[in-house]
Amino acid sequence: MPSITDPDWTDPECPVARTLDLVGDKWSLLVIRDAMDGARSFTEFQRRTGIARNILTDRLRKLTAHGLLAQRTAPSGRRQEYVLTDVGRDLFPVILTLRQWGERHAFAPGETHSTLVDQHGAPVPEIAPTSADGTLLGTDTTHVRKSR
Amino acid sequence: MPSITDPDWTDPECPVARTLDLVGDKWSLLVIRDAMDGARSFTEFQRRTGIARNILTDRLRKLTAHGLLAQRTAPSGRRQEYVLTDVGRDLFPVILTLRQWGERHAFAPGETHSTLVDQHGAPVPEIAPTSADGTLLGTDTTHVRKSR
DNA sequence: CCGATCGGTTGCGGATTGAAACCATTATGC
DNA sequence: GCATAATGGTTTCAATCCGCAACCGATCGG
Image (cartoon, rainbow over all chains, first blue to last red):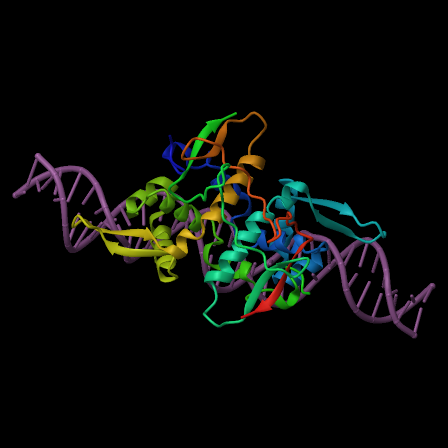
């Protein structure tokens, strides 16, 4: 059984590599993050992320071209806006795991940081990948198989 | 309750931004991916990822400096090797979600790609973040709270 | 002892990024 | 309805980053 990163599965066949090719830069996932929080306009994305304008133009086009964002004219006759598609929204678990890793490891002990909570204010448990039978998955118990 | 990307929580306070600052480039997560699959030597990382040597040097140092990798001399008197720390291994859910997104959205319908399976060969279910009470979490039902 | 391998470093050209200025098209205040 | 400002970019230019290839000292294997 080929391991999770068997040479046969390296770039550009590896799904991880393909995903990172789309969103594996400094800004794309921050744009997605802000889109998930309701940012829609060019200016709003720019304000929240602090990204340079020309780069933002490029990223919005790229994400739109690949179907993560959709560009449409706003209902209120306003300028156009960028909204997440289902494809883009599916990156939610990625953003979430990045956030949980950051909360856990990217802050000095005692340093103030955010914690994820659900709509009732209850803390969100850390994501722990499990197999179909409920057992916890680790780097050594996960492999890949060719399919489709 | 501040939303997941409330302006007050943008860079560099946002855990997502901090995490991406460490691994949000084209190569770092691929190095981590290969480390999770047992790659240890400089040459092995280079061969698997195809990264340029000077860049690999830089990434290995950076990841080591931030505690995701540990550099140590190999047991067999051989040259030194790079192994994942617990901190680095905690990125497993990130790699996993990236992979699942890629499998789902980065391949043309019908195009051959890999699927994740556990040690018994059973397919790994897609990660779906749930709240403590078991309800499914989405972009609109997740928020952040200040803490610690 | 000779050649191959390992783990880099160096130099260079090309691509990418960031900051700022500029610009046409809308809203908005008065 | 006119001036002003904001919106959504584009352009320019400098600085940085990246990829490639060559080089290099130390080690390993025969």
